[in-house]
Structure formats: C-alpha cells, structure tokens
Image (cartoon, rainbow, N blue to C red; front, side, top):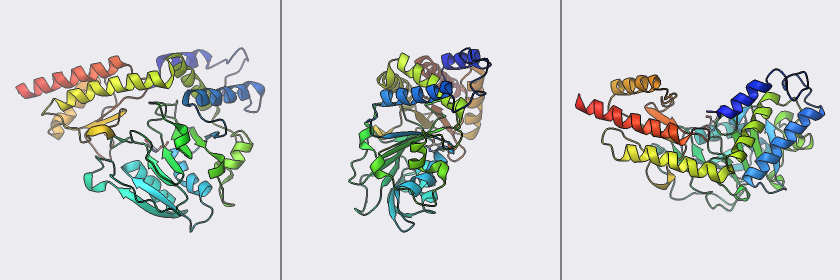
Length: 347
Ligand SMILES: Cc1ncc(COP(=O)(O)O)c(C=O)c1O
C-alpha cells in the first residue's frame, strides 16, 4: 500500500507541479526544481534513518535484483574474490546465485532444511571474504533478522521489504540496498546506502551501477527515475509527519501481534515461522486444503482485503503489512480470519 495522502498529493500535482506549468515528469532533471526534490528526498531519508553523514545515499534503477549484481561488482576487486552469503529464503538465494557470476560465493549458512522457517544458529564467515550478505527480511518466507548479525567483515543487507519498518543502526552495515516498492514508494527506484571505504568498483562495472561514479554525479550519471524519486519524497514526508521510524515500528508491531495472535490460537491456520525471527511485515500462513484457501481468498477480496495470495514460490496465503497499512486494516484481517474459521468449522 501507499498512503492515501501521498496518492492524493500526487494526484493534485500530477499535471502541474509547484506552479511550474509542467508536471514533475516534464521538467528537466538537471533543473533547480528537480534538484531540490532530489536533495530534499535524500535529506529526509538521512534524517529518518539517522544515516551517518559520511555514508553515500544513491538512487538507482534496476531494483534489488540489479543490486544483487552491482554489490559484488562494487565491493570485490576481482572475479576470484570471495563473498559470504547467508541463505534464509528465496531472495537471499537469488542474490547469491547472481553474485556467483561476479565473485566466488561462500555459503555462510543455508536454512533450506527447515524450509526457511528459522534463522541459522551460527554463521561460517571466513576472514578473507570481501563482505557478508543477508536479506534482513525474507518477504516470501516471513523470516526477519531481529538485529544485524555480529560479523567481523563488512555486512551487506537487502532491506527491500523492511527498510523504514523498524529502527535499525545503519552503522552496523557497510551497505544497505532496497527497492522502493514496499516501504519507500513506487517501484522503479532503488536506494543504496553505502560506506565509501567499502567501495572498490571494477573497471567493467556498468557506469549506471558504479557507486563511485553515481556518487560523484549525485545519482545523475544517467537520467534518474524522476517521478519515483518525487513519490519517494512525498512518502518520506508522510513517514516524518506520522512520527518517523519509531512510530512506524510501534504500529507495525501492533499489526503483526494482531495477526500472529489470531493464527497462534487457531488449529485451523498454520504459520510456519516461530520465535523472534518472525517477520513483523510479511506473515505467511496456510489453510487445511486448497479449496478452503481459494474460498478464503475469494471471501477476503469481497471484503476489500486484497493481495493475500501467497507468493507463487511458496503458495498458501501471506499478509504483507507495510507502513501504509493502518492498524484498522490488520484488525479487519484478524476479524475475517476468526470469522472464516468459525464458519468453516461449523460445516
Ligand atoms: C527482499 C527482496 N529482495 C529483492 C526483491 C526483488 O526486487 P526487485 O523486483 O525490485 O528487483 C524483492 C522483491 O519483492 C524482495 O522482497
């Protein structure tokens, strides 16, 4: 979800932005008006996440999928360099597979045997790897690191689905990347937050993903996704007005508790992830049969509870509750879960 207020502002400003007689999509990305939007968006993100001032903040294209390749191309000096990957679900596995094309991947842990329902007890991270990579929240499997794992090499995190959802210490990471479409705005723009001393781009690194070059050019080596950047700015102002990341976290924990409580006290629904690695954002769950699942999803749609179908890689159902989802939305889902179970058990 995007917040209604953000959508309404965008709608009002769509055809004419700030009295310029042009849309934000029509003005030059090198003009003062757009540069102001770009700089304000970066300042807002820096303030909300308390990003240390020496870190670079880049706005790039290509999604988190692009960053799976860009990370090794910028953080390892040569193709025989090693990087450690912690595999806790679909997205970290995909990142490792992509990185394999550009460096030697060392698997630090793989929770496949548990079907990715737990976090690894320990990590095997050799001292000579250039970095260790995690997906801080596995969007499909619903497993989240409650805090940055302690490692003695630079830590890289794909935060695509939990950035801004709870407080994090940016200084624990050498690099954070996130595609925008979950908790930053619409798809088409990717944020990279990186500590400059970790960066050593190879000569073959495409210029659009060369962190150093993009930093030198304020992420404008090529034309940036201007509308997406503008939308991110509106979104970040909304987060700030709502009380910042602390307030988002409080609300996200409240929403997650409503749904987990409901699932945990039921014999009808099953949710695979237990304990403190449960995601507060993405909650996968299943019903006893495919027929019941289909009927559950159909009934949910009728009540305006949308997008509950699980990812095709896992099936079942999934409640994804990003920042813009109000507590009332989670409450409506909890009510529907209970009611559906009651009716199904009567039959
Ligand atoms: C954790 C995570 N990583 C990576 C991706 C891929 O992002 P994109 O499709 O923007 O490349 C997603 C998409 O949902 C995700 O949730």
